[in-house]
Length: 78
Image 1: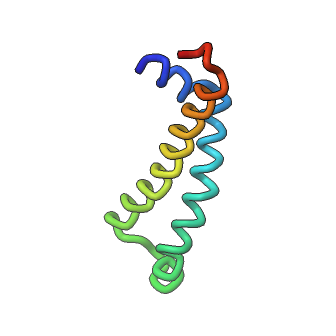
Image 2: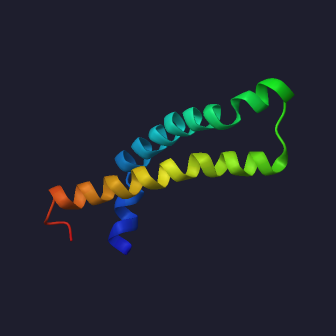
């Protein structure tokens, strides 16, 4: 588990996952809340919490897949 976290927070994987979370999270946020934001002009607190989770999920998915790919292609790191 210690190895997994050290890989997950290494510079390359961290920033790649962050970029993917921003890209995918923004797209999903606009799909799910764009019309609400446009019509109402503001978001409710529970909507903001769900939007934060909308960004967290792609970050976690990208991190998990990046760590798994790294370990698969670098068998000496196990």
